[in-house]
Length: 116
Image (cartoon, rainbow, N blue to C red; front, top):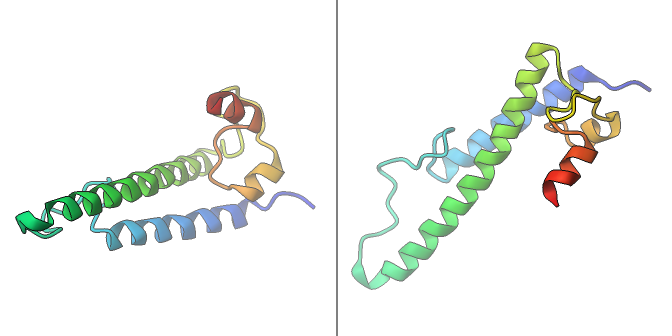
């Protein structure tokens, strides 16, 4: 059975739409910037709770933005005809890795070196 690049593209596009939707639900744009009209509350008594909530939202937005960047990079590789080629070493990314994580732009060896 060979790798289905069309299925990978469909998965990436669905994942992108889902991530954008999650960012919007948190009050953030695709860029990761929070909307100016986002209100965490203004009461001085609730300042600690507001700060904690804002910090949590910013952490979630950063994580979603990072995932969106990965998906966008993979989609750019698809459009360029280089999908499945490691950004670091230029070797082929295994089909199993791409099936498990279609947004992968690094082979498992390069990813594990960067993660260490």
